Structure formats: C-alpha cells, structure tokens
Length: 508
RNA sequence: GGCCACGUAGCCAAGUGGUAAGGCAGAGGUCUGCAAAACCUCCAUCACGGGUUCGAUUCCCGUCGUGGCCUCCA
Image 1 (cartoon, rainbow, N blue to C red):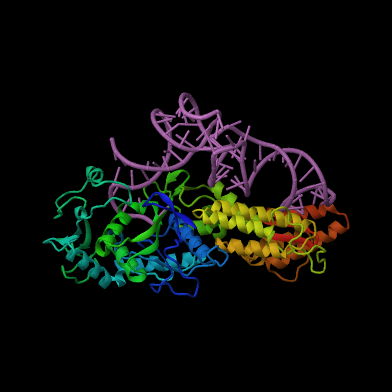
Image 2 (tube, rainbow, N blue to C red):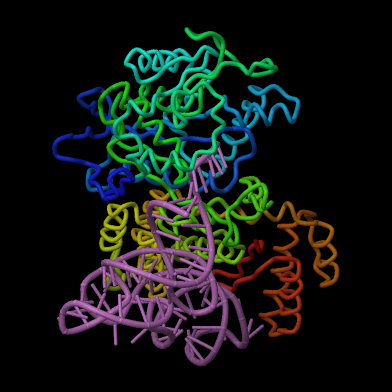
C-alpha cells in the first residue's frame, strides 16, 4: 500500500522490505505491529462533522490494514488516538461556563465516545489523556532540557529551542525566516527566540484560578500544547512510528512541533509516514463558530444516517476538502439505499436459481470487484474508486438476480467489502421506525378506508391497510387501491409491490 | 504580505500524456393495472490564455476564481 507522506510530499510504500511487519497474532521485532498515532480532539466543545470525517478516514485505514483480504494478508495494527484534555481553549471555555475544566473535558469526551460508537468508528487500542500522562510528559521535557533543546525561564515556563533544531520547518515546508516574518507575538514572554514554543506553562501571574496544574521540576504548571502527543506516541508506540495522522490544519504548528520535539529528544525519525486529511467545508465555506455554520456530530446524526455520512466522506479523496451540502448528503443517503437494496434476499425460498453461484454475474464478477477495490485502496486509500467498484457489483447483483441467478455469494462479497469501509448497510427496521410515527393518524386512515385492525400500533395498521389494498387490487378496484397507497404515501410510508407481495418502508 | 492546494457534466466526485470511474438529479425505454424498485439507453472534451509534445484534461508559465496554513482548530 502506498500513502501520501506530507514530509516528503510523495507517495511512500507503507510496507518496506527492510522493515517486515508482523502478521496478525505475530509480534514484531520491537514487540509491536504497525504503529499508528492519530491526533484526537480537544474536548472543549461538541464535536463537529470535521472531527467525524477525520475519524472516519483513519477508521477505514485501520479496517483495511487489518482486513485479511488486503495483499499483506491483514496486519497487526496498534491504533492510538489521544484526548488533549488540558489546553488553553478548554480552560477558557470552562471559565466562560463557570465549570471545572477537567469536568468539562470529561463530559465532552463521554459525548464524543457515544457518538463515535453511533458512527461505527472502531475504538482506538489506546485512548491516552494528557491528564493521565503527566509523568511521561515531564520526563520528555526533562530530556529535552538536558539535551539543550529546551530551556526554563525564571517565570517557570519551559520553551523548546527552535534554533537548536536544524531542520525545523521540514514538515510544513517553511523556513524559520518565513515563519518569523509572520509572527505576531508580543515578545514580552521570556523567550530566547519568537518561534520558541511552550513545553510547560507556569500559572499566569494573576493566579491560576481553576486551572489544572501539576508539580514539576520547574514548579507548578501544566503541559504546553504539542508536547503531549510526542510523549504519548512515544510511550505507547515507541520512538519511531509507522503512521502519524491528523487534519491538514495540524501540519503547522502542531505536527511541526511534535516532530521537532520527538526527533530532538530521540535523534530518531519520528514517523515514517505523515498523513493528513482535508478539511470539511459547509456550503463551500470554512466551518467556524464565527460564521455560525458549524454542523455538530449531533446535528448530523439527527439528519443523516451514519452510513450516509460515511459514504459521503468516502466518496471523495481523504486529502481533498469535503464540502457538506444538503444536496450532497441527500445523494449519499440515496446511494446507501442502493447498496442496501442490492443486499435484499434474492426471492422466496424455493424459487432456487438454476444457475450455479457466480454465473450470470456480468463481465466483472465478485473476483474482479475485489481486485478493483483492493487496487483502489492500495493507492493512497482511494475510497472513491473503491466505492465505484462496489456500485459496479451492485449493478451486477441486481441484474443477475433479475435473471434468477443465485446472488448470495456476490452479496456476501458486497457485504464484506462494504464492511471494510465501515458501512453497516443495516437498514434500521421499518417496524421500529414506524413506532415513532403518529398512531392516531394511522388509525384514522384505517377508519377512512373502512379497514378494521385489532392492534393499535402503526405497523399493524399499515399491514391491515396493505391487506385491504391487495384485496382491492385483486378485485381490480384500482381506485381504492391507489387511494390507500396515496394516503400512506402522504403519511410517509412508501410502498413497493414485489413478487412476494407488497413491501412498505418508512420514508427517511 | 509569505507558504500551499484546488478549479472535471445540473450537483457531489475519481482519474489519465493518446479523446474521462462512480453516486445523485434529468430524459427515453423494459417491467407494472398504474406506480415504486430494478434493468437497458442517453447526458462533460476537463476555469481561461500561452508553451512543450506527433498528441494535454493530464507537464510548464501566466491570468482569474475558490479554499487552506502562517494565531486556536480534525
């Protein structure tokens, strides 16, 4: 598999002959498999669809790498993603809300974890939090100070010495002079150099009201923004990792500073591949609080299914910006429906197909679909192309089924490949969905059409109405049949007549 | 001001030095009592202007436009 590496600006092979990676169940030379670290959220406010997009991208990468169907035969991946639960924004936000900063973080983390589950995101193997990693962070800072890469000030802050890092700027492809020209710092801080950044922050002179703080060799304080990721990646994955991921907006300064810290401390390459996902836009504009166009994960889940959201994300390349529009989301919703329809059982049992499995499946067939799917993902995780292969298989399945062929095998391929992308394709049960509809409205409909129904629940009422419609059709009373259908449609129930009888579904 | 991406059909969006996947929408057809679903067919010359090349949407330069980063951000 090749992935685009921000550091070199090129596609890099993930698996190199000089660094054989272990298979599932095996242990690598260092006792670890493929090591992947992804920068998680700062839990100071509700997560938005940008966080969801990022999480979905890395989720698919992990699923694919672990999938036995990939050319490497499935890899043992250790996936670490952090929570930065101590941070300026978090402290400011807590002060605004007059709540405890750590409590705010706790609450937001709980919400986001619930949403991650709803989004069918695999939990990372390790979810470290800054507040629980202070010793590792302090140890790393001490190491940097000892090596001359950092210095403490009289105020009790510790700064990273950017000028001591010869290749500072290599990840974001800038040089110190360009960066310096753009600085807007007040130089009242006791920095040696304007670009030096904080590793450890002493409480402000006016007092650290409500700020979390810990003891350290430099006095009370808290970690700076970037050091936590260096420390946590190192603790859980080692000095050198295989993949480091995050949003494109983290390239500078966050990842630039991480690479500076980690490599200054260890003198070893920090990550083999730096992966960055593009950012979500809303109607062509950046999502931001000031524009008031932030779509939270809760908003998104209320409007669109997890599969639709995921398909929307995967329909474009992970490095491109992804523009969320109502129209695009509606298209994704319909597309998910198309995948679901292809997975419906072929027909009534007993009408067993005379064709052996695999026959009649068009020119492509499941094997070719798999090959296209794999080739697409091998090439820098081209999920859009992988999806195209899935839709080709959908067409083949529908066509073959119409011809009476046995499509069960092809369907299981479709289900498996969709699963690699994290698509569940489980349509929520219509009976369940109907429970949320207005029962009174439907019983009124039943009365209107003079249909008797013993059970008051919506699903039973619909079944009774449908039975009446079927009777009307048999009697060629199409006016009555169509009136029932029209009234159900007006109430949000769609009807399809199939060889097995009428099928109803809740319109979403 | 500095750095960097991108600009493909009505919309979303892959991709390639030799005339462009897929999804949604639309048109016609098959099926259906009529629909729906499904299937078949149709629907773009790739922002604009130069250049390199036998040939560019794909490479180079410029223009315009959009977006990102440079300060917090997935």
